Length: 227
Image (cartoon, rainbow, N blue to C red; front, side):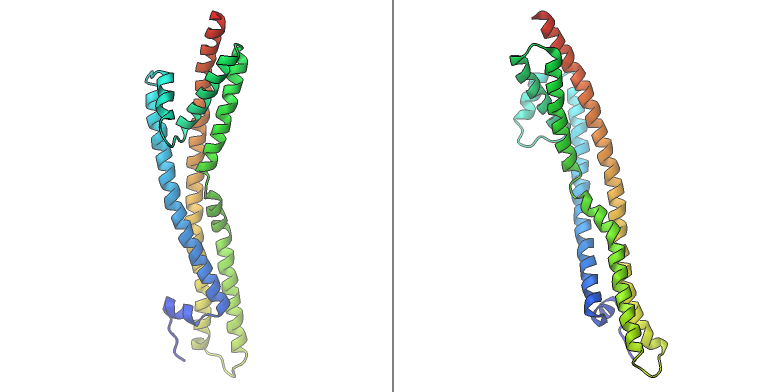
């Protein structure tokens, strides 16, 4: 009994259900790698953007000029977007209210909303990686169990079973588990890494919010005292 024990040969010899499982897992793996590269680029850009903004903000730049500069840009992300949301609300409230606490509270809420949106953007696609990493091995195991079950059913119909008859069926079934692990391991590693990076960025954004709120509070109190 001759059998092609290459990957393509075993795939073509597998049952329809096992083939479907393999194709599903390969699709999940391709999508996972696409999202991994996408998230890596997005998070690297977010870190770079944050560093550039912090360098300019803490260099003593005029807040009005910095706000006008960022507002002129088409797509402001990260810490710059949080700054713009807070400063815009600060200016709006200061025109209609002289109470420093009211101004600062409103400004902080505006920045909190902007922070939440930024974190949502950073976490985009991470849920897919988490799902792929958790269910891919089980999908592969299902394909393996199905393939081995069909192999033993076929063996029951012959008079004498030999290793050469059993090996191809078991090999093609085990490939499903291998593909499941191939899809799951990179997804799990990437999810853990990206989640840690998102957490660090979120902490940096939150620290900036606190520091910027303190600056705006001093300005609001000074304006209230002068008024």
